[in-house]
Amino acid sequence: MALSDIDRQLLQRCIARQSHAWEDFVDRFLGLVVHVINHTSTSRSIAVSPHDLEDLASEVFIAILADDYAALRRFRGQSSLATYLTVIARRVVVKELLKRRIVPNQSEGGEIQHVEDQAGAAEERLANLEEVHRLLAELDGEEADIVRLYHLEGKSYHEISRETGVPENSIGPALSRAREKMRRASEGAASR
Image 1 (cartoon, rainbow, N blue to C red):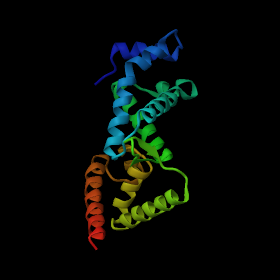
Image 2 (tube, one colour):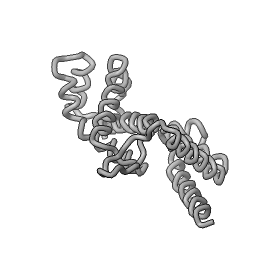
Image 3 (tube, one colour):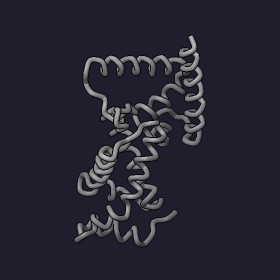
């Protein structure tokens, strides 16, 4: 889908720093950003609180604003603006979720909480990290690299393809196969 005239004008207004352009931009794309946050967190089985949702949306818009709208200036119009922003939002959200270590940890009130930097939580993170490394060891080198790059480093299929030499359209199927192997290995370890 090509760049629409409305989005082209909105881009030009933002880059030119016209009055109310940024507010119009946020109004137009806030729903998209919220959708990306919800989809990304759900696909990683991470629930986010309303506060986290607001923070993550802010981080996405800060990334778009950074370096005098550098992300918008790099846009070449080879896709819709929404598609381009979806990629940016997804990358920011994945990095922030990893950085913040938001995990599905239910409190009594049902709210999601951040992992605290206490000895017990640090021990749990170490055990989880050891489990991730054990599961990655079940995969061959290429599969392990793809899983690490996608899930741990938040890289896009394009970036993974460029780094590993695996065709971009083979990344998704490779991830699916790797996840299934890891699931079987995890279930096998749990039944022992």
